[in-house]
Amino acid sequence: MSKPRARASSTHKRTTKLAPKPIDSFSAAEARIAVSRQRLPNFPAQLSSLTRLGRHINKLSQESANLALRPHGLNLVAYNTLMMLYGTADDRLSPSQLADASGEKRTNITRICDELTEQGLIARVAGVDDRRSVVVSLTRRGIQLIESLQPVMTQLLQKIYGDFSAAELRELHRLLRKQLAQLDRNLLAVAERAT
Image (cartoon, rainbow, N blue to C red; front, side):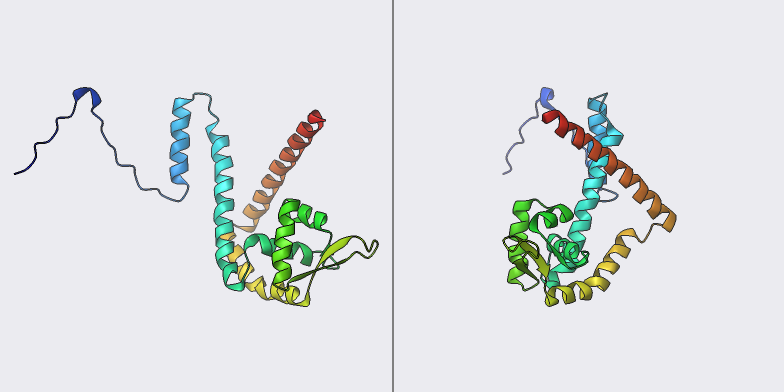
């Protein structure tokens, strides 16, 4: 014998709408931004969408790079650290210079350098001008790894940016540099007010 169904209260009726499937991986965020715009009339939906889109693209780019680098025992943070050293004329930087160049916090650079040292990709050596200072340099193995990874990373970048024309890439670069300049000015102004 089946159990009788409980009657739904007429005051608590709720209709459930099935959410449409996202068109792409950012559609769900855009839908929520649209709802926020409806609920908050002065909500800067376009600016919010651009900010979230930038974070979303960065996240997907990092995930793609980590997948490409994993078979080689690296992640994107470690690879970028190695590339900052490789992009220096003598393949060496102080830890603070390396933190600034890579965009990592100085405390995080210590951990990253520890891991890369254990892998034999970098070495800590005494500074040339001041033997008490320490600089980080690429080992021969680190240089070979970076050079061997270039086809992998070039292919990844082509997949990320392949649908853009040369003119679109130049315009994207120009616009991002313009945004970066504004962020730099804003951060400097905040820092100056704090002192």
